Image 1 (tube, rainbow, N blue to C red):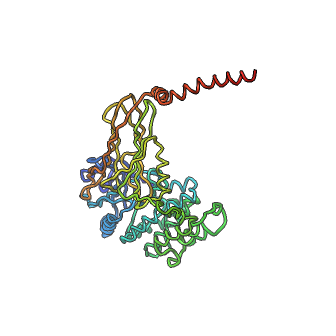
Image 2 (image 1 turned 120 degrees about the vertical axis):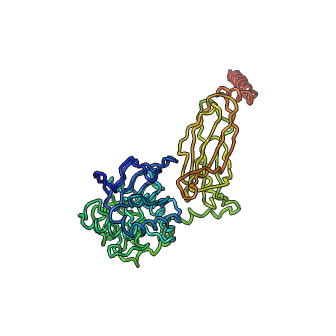
Image 3 (image 1 turned 45 degrees about the vertical axis):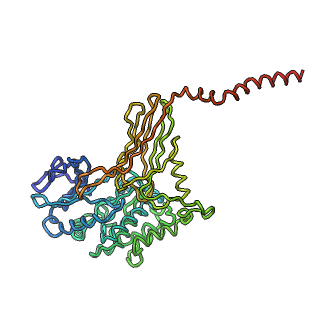
Length: 475
């Protein structure tokens, strides 16, 4: 939705306003007839949030209550691909305020306008968003308006798409009335992404699968679909410019079924879609299960709450080392996955397995040196969301500034919102202390000489003697 700049009315907020004595509006994200969205900062914690202000017709009737009930249901939806809801309240002028987490990153709509993305990245997004929608549907929550503008790539990462903008029947109906008055070829008109049954006033979980399929097709081809009723035929089966991109399996057959106009012929649930992707992916069974040869040690237990940390024992002055921390939440990690993880931890130190007493969706990791012997530089964000599928990692560059003994302390804390309020506290989950010895680089040849001087003497004395004897024999 395009930003509309208009003079502020009594029932409108402006950048700089303080809502509920807590949230300072910093920037306007979208502004429409039904709601306004702002980037806000909690003045107590300093964290960023997305603030939705329900305005106009929706604020004064049951539509606002329906939307608040939907957001309350989102509390029970816990998945990294679904935006997290924080709280809702009502202002003195009657407007409803909805607070959600703010996802930083590009919107998928910008990828469409820039010419699209690869089918491989589309499959990654499809798998992750389907898993998130599965959790939402089990809680009775339907998105109802999936489109490229509602998918944010967190921190620009293809593997971290997040669905935002969950809507209700009332809001969708009012929005459709407004969209119907716009030309269908306008980019801001999102009716092309709605399932056919939604235009008849019926929205269900299968409608989300249809909209997700059309969204992925548009992202791959770099074009908005032109007609809701024949999107599958236009994007998949017909020729023309859109068909120049070859979509491989399992994405092609999956998108064909997702975008079928008849709900009964689509995937009936996200579980069916995920099973289809798994079955049709080449070598998926071989990749997901360990080799049967040598079955004694083909699976390595990497339980929830375990971490890999690779601090070095010995460092050299001015020689930068990369210290890394890895966390994988999955119950079982195969030998191949463990080898890949350890291989990616390319520091010279040994890999240690640590136990984390508490683990949550948001963790903060800090590497601390209390003296000036080691200079630390964080190469990743201290606070990160734990990936349910994948490996969450922290990296630091450590540069010794002098010789001697030093201590590195790894401190991990669980970032927790207390009592559902945006008041964050740190609960310590892990503290690991590692002793580091720092030596001068000139000590390397000295140490080598001390350990191997006998062989070196024998080599440098023996070679000339052998050459002299050989020349004597030739004469």
